[in-house]
Image (cartoon, rainbow, N blue to C red):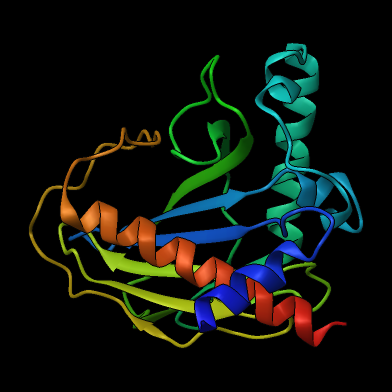
Length: 219
């Protein structure tokens, strides 16, 4: 019954509430891989929920110049909405932005129904940084789901962060002698393993609950 109430509350809106998901994946050499999965509605309109989900054709039909323009808008949105703290040092890295299938989180294809944009980068924290935190701007239109994890460890530490809040500290892993991972970052293809399925189910459940609570408290 509780789940039914949450889903019903979310659907009361004229359109589904846009989502913002951040993944912070820490590698053995302490490099942090950041991925920001954002709904384009978040920067296309001041009240994102007034727009319907953005179809894949919106991106596919754009010129290269228009795509570059919207990639810059996504970067500006991330820079103005999210603060990334490693220890006490704030960083705003250089983001690579690409269009993805909103459901599969794989590169946008001719059959993708809806599009999201994925901003990704790698950050090397300073040697004295002991933890990682994320702050969401007070003016943000939606909460953020933060998923912290370590590479090759199926355990994910999820948090919901509301506008104006800072996440709980996530301890950085101790440095090992393992070789660093290659630099390029691309959305990975869906994997048929239990950890990937669990991560997807967890994210969907958190998004539904957080979106419902956020909308109900703003009525």
